[in-house]
Image: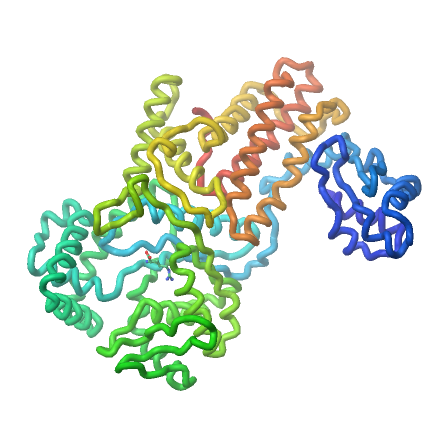
Length: 564
Ligand code: ARG
């Protein structure tokens, strides 16, 4: 397809003393269609021309030699407004959407490696609604980078290490029961954890015991290791049920424990580089100079910390994957943690520290207050997905009881609704989870867009002709038809923006807008009932919308049933 903005810049540059790139930068998209498709504000020429911008716009409008891609150029105050030749434009775009099976794809990545770390729940802790954000935002970012030509590595940095495992082992040995845990692993392990913390308030010596167990685990004690492995296995079994529902796959589950034998090297290296400072028997890195609290790197009893593991992980990843970018989709509560360790990696002299990117997102709370595992204020992610699927099933039974594969469709739509809502706003916004909102499918929701997709499928099927791009493009005269092709034309730029800003919601909003446009078109312009030539042209638009909604939703991690 032609880069029309670039064409506009070229046309102008033929007439003025200003580089094409500078012109390109200031070209705007007018707010109303009546004002044309591209606008050039003439202010930046006022100095060189020594004239007022409105006069410059007038003169340029009379002098510019338009190509066949444009219908006209008109001055409007200080602006020069370009109008596309709609027939040529529609043809250019629709031919491309028709021919290209990967419409929207670009090769920005050139096979460079990008790591996207996301989800990363903690073993033996609930996989709750707070984790949904990292999970679905991360998955979408991973898909987007992949689609833009990067080689992506999806990593689940499991929280499977640390003193809390000492507590769990202690608690299990005192009060645990294997069968009860096997039946309901996370809920039971959580109970043990909560009980341990409660009793430790009165009996602080319990904490020493827990520390002792964690130390044993670090030293490879058989009993400690086998219990820890078991906690991990049963937890992962639960997490995997959720990943399966969400259709999410990871390339690596190398979590915190994976780095336990890679810590010594980090400590030694920090020492050699004179970055460690003793503080009350423990080791810290002094970050005062950078206006940050100085983090503890090694405790006085020799055990390492979360932050040490992150430093080790980044070095390991660089050596293993030689990443172009190493992206972390982790809550904004951990902003400081990321600033600290990335700074430390930089101080160690690794220039790739700048390629480690923390992509934060806002907090989820419940209507009754902040999430708190200890206080039992927690909504399990699995329950949310299951309820959304059940509700969808009820709606299907009510509205379309004869639908084939009802359960499968209910799953795709129910889960899709939850994911879509998660990706509807910019990621940094905090929000309050509400069952009502999550289970309401009215308005700008996943089901609405999926329904529009199913509508395009049904029209294409009912047409019973082979759609192709040899149509009479002059028949597409409606504004709404042109609005749709313009939206289709934008698709790949929207994905690119979403990629560079780590904001999948650009795609979500875009798809909603496209679906709304298509539905306006559908209500206004007959398709199957039209005479043959116009019908073919409108089917081609339908096919373009069909492909773009499918690709867009899939990038977000949402499936697209053909009937619903
Ligand atoms: N397991 C941590 C949590 O649930 C998130 C891990 C984030 N990733 C990292 N590399 N620190 O809070």
